[in-house]
Image 1: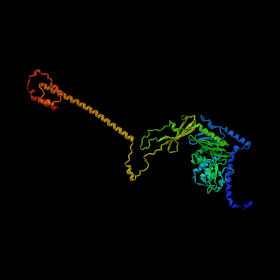
Image 2 (image 1 turned 90 degrees about the vertical axis):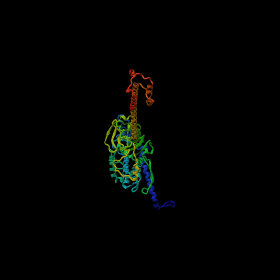
Image 3 (image 1 turned 135 degrees about the vertical axis):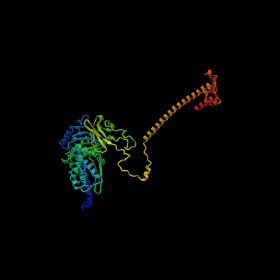
Image 4 (image 1 turned 120 degrees about the vertical axis):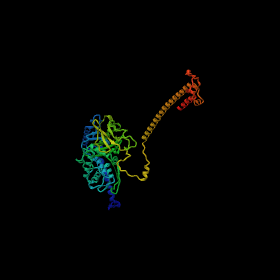
Length: 558
């Protein structure tokens, strides 16, 4: 108990919990202010004149370093920046647009944490609880960035990711390393393995937070490779673009507080259109480092600057991103490639067959594109095909270069979008009785084939009808001509015989030949006397019986 003036008595035991909580919040606020001091010093405090002059002189000397990408023929010239090393890479294709000492080994500082979070998300779930050990909390350097978590407190993995990427808390990175890797050393081994898998060439990591160590280094190229994988993760991309985060009190972490990022691109102090997110880093040896991702017009760029000075890491990043977006463009390969045109509409062209769809079974990947300078065209590229592919749905890969610089690739894919209606590998399963009855009446009809068959049959029938008509007309005409000729000769012979006997036709003969106009006309004319010398002759040859026989014979011929 303490006695103050005016008789006020205060129970220390009652107020001690509130005092401890107030003390912890004060500590968090003080740490946040300390974290911001280095960033304000570069802008507002002159420091020592000699130190400032030395920093400016070093930055100017770095600005004069050669830019390797500017030496490429017909390649756009990039800006001179104060960073010791810098790179701009297209995230989806891996095409390098700007390069300055990209393989020089430098200290990454807190940009190390993008690899830490990438490994953590791949090897844990977001609801896993991370316990902070005493070693994780107190092994960090005094004055380095942290969020005031005490030993023994527990946070979900998702909150830890926000603490690492937004606040850049070193003790949180240590705790996550112990949780995922079993120990901080074991996690460092996982970091080196992951870097090798991603294709890093110049890196070696010994801790999860990026605090200075001579054996902890990487390059701008390796950081861009790690960032390509990092920004493919939707959650990590979201966190990397978060300006501040509210940490709520829980049973395992009693404090409620809000902390903001130090990335002035994310906070909007250096606003940039199309910004996705990024991660800052700083140590005395590493100076300012920054990894940033932005997207415009379908082109996603990653920029890395290492060993820069504040606030030039932000302004240099903006200049480099503008260089990339203003001087390069996307060129779709499938829409421009003619040398490897394998689309064939007649390949298995059927609507329903045992091969499935009638679409080509091979095609260039429709989503693949190149990154070319705006002054270049697709015909300026040189292509080379390789059959060394790992994806079972691909059979080849075509790489493209422009003046010897890789600018993208396209894969030759096997069509897998349409499933075949027939499965030859699966065993035949008996259908249920009700389904069997309903499926027996289903008939698949190829409309095209049916129409062709109907047209062919109709053509054949029409041809047969024409041939039959021609044959009938020819036979009728021939029969008509023969019948007419035969009737004519019969009538003529009969008349000749009648003239020989010099006698008119009988009543029966006239009745029989009624309607025979030629005979009646001929018989009504005066008969010429062909045999005047025999006109008075008579005999059995010209008797009535003879005439009847002639008439009967004529009728028999009919």
